[in-house]
Image 1 (cartoon, helix red, strand yellow):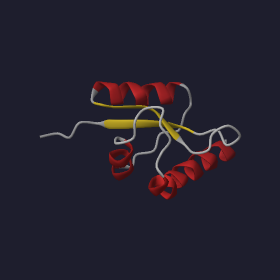
Image 2 (cartoon, rainbow, N blue to C red; image 1 turned 90 degrees about the vertical axis):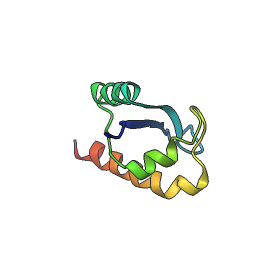
Image 3 (spheres, rainbow, N blue to C red; image 1 turned 120 degrees about the horizontal axis):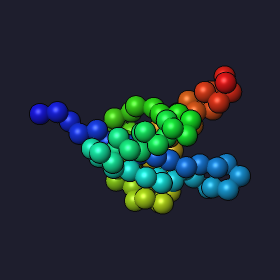
Length: 86
């Protein structure tokens, strides 16, 4: 059986937010739509199944829990590197 695609979108504005927050999440068609929307707007997409599994437990518009800070920090570095190289 094929595993359903899952996606989580995060928002983090250093000047405004105390921690990254989940702004969208879903599986199947909704996950595809989240990924499609991100790409359409030039938002980097990173695949990390373990992190997505953990983030799926966070409610939409809720900040990520401290135990996920280190993993999400890696995502933020990835995004920063992409922005700095373009």
